[in-house]
Amino acid sequence: MNPAAIGKRIGRIFSGRGFFSGKSNKPSTYAERFDLTDHGVILPDLADFPECRQIQQVPSLRNADAVTAPMAAALNGCDVAGFEASLKSLQAQLIGLDAFNAAETTILQTQMKNIRSMGVSYIQHKAQRETTKRDDLPKSAAYESLVEDGVFASQVDTSRIRAHLESSINELVAQEPPELCDPSQGYDRSRMIFPADDAVLFEELHKAFAPGSLLSAASKYHRVPDLDFKHACLHICAPTDTHYTQTLQDCQTTSRLVGLHFDPKPVMKVILYLNDVTPDTGPFCFFPKSHRWRFSELEMVVAKGNSTGNYLNTPEHRRVALSFPQILRKNAILGRMVPDGSPLSAKLLQAEKEYTSDFANCMLFDAGHGFHRGGICKTGLRINLQIALK
Image (cartoon, rainbow, N blue to C red; front, side, top):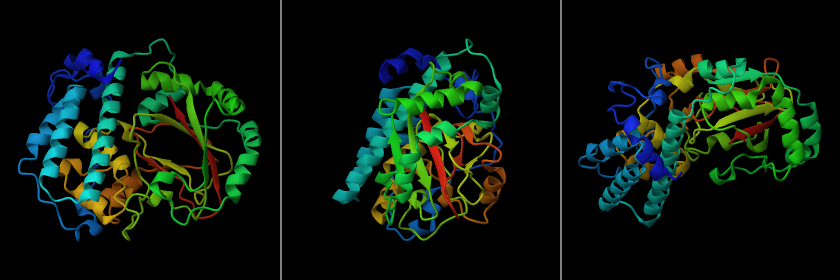
């Protein structure tokens, strides 16, 4: 079913005002999953980042609410056409300010394209979750942990998987990393593997995940038809890596929370360690219960689109992003924007949980809603598979 049809089919379900504000008389099932309202976390405003204060600002829109209110209403009502129309209106008004050169106009168009894509993905998943129960699947420890904390950590046997991938691992370890990892490159050293290209690997993954019924738990939690492996990214993390600095890459300001993010699409993922991982070798870190934190729909959806549509890695990119109304200046890759020593930094650092291999080597988690980071090595290597489910 196409996005427009989904919107028409379930629009009435989400017609109550203020989906995330609690104003609706009868909150939707999807709204109720975000039940933690007193978490105290506020997504940073790009305009507060030090290197943004020296950029010549684009004139503000005269009536930002006239643009953002229809966008919020469209998300609340699962109205794809309305969301797209409001984005076109915003883009036209920003271009109408006559403040961008040709390169900046292209940046703006790319950012808008990605915001649209993330909005459609969000509406589709919202519709799917509202209409799919998965009561046919049994509850399990993995399922209960996903519901409560957004992550399930366990130990699985990776010996056969590691042996099968040994030659690829050796090739990546020997590979000369880039001096600076460009946003288009993904990770410094990685290899994407699809089921059609390596059936043996995915057969072994099925065997490893079967004892904990991980795929079943993820399907029941995500409330979708049976999930399976979409692809696996073999990733080697090393102290020379720079992938986690891609956003705001040319800036000097950094943060103890660098790398903290939530994924742009509503996806379930697995991190599977293939070697011993200590606190110094870049362990996966998750913020338990963050998948239940309630934010404005508009703020979160646009933050996701901004994170892939504009890496803010040149003054021109930041100038374009700063032209947006305040609620649209947030970013899903937020860690570097949280100032050290701030109350928000202290709150997030206290909430962060580190997963080393002596505790668990397999972490199934809600990547699209839960705050997480990892792969920031001080010494040694972290050899892992990052597995996306579809």
